[in-house]
Length: 233
Image (cartoon, rainbow, N blue to C red):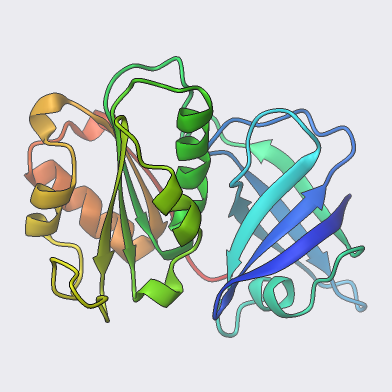
């Protein structure tokens, strides 16, 4: 069981939630937890949420985007308050993780709230002062829909770069017109296949599948592309 420590709005339809879990063993960047809600009549709903936090400590950070008609996300975004208890299980996952002992180039590609595990990787990269080149492409509907925009703006340095793609409304002066991520976007805003980066893609199922196909078409080794996708919540 976990206790909600804090909540804050992140987007018009999203929230960042911190949970304290006694005895938490720590987690790697990219891992997730299962959150289970139980109704008064005994009905249970379980959803997986990636962690923006990693390492030691007993406070976990989630970012949740509300899915209309979802079973779990509306409660987490609209109703949860500090002091509430949530049932969580984890950490889960060993495939979609990044550790700072790795030295190859890393390309992160996020769609919407798919930024969460990739932000955890970027945070670890910064804390470790890793020299491994890391680049992030973050696709959102508009600037208002971006999670962690201020933090991402403060992270870039010589070894980390953030590129933005806006699918519905681009800010004035943005060099790319609003639209879905396509082959031209990837060519302009990601590490080339010739440099053999490890690629992590996270977001809605349709986004992840489309981007993975584009990456393979651009010459990326499928074995170096790791994906994590989500559906209804």
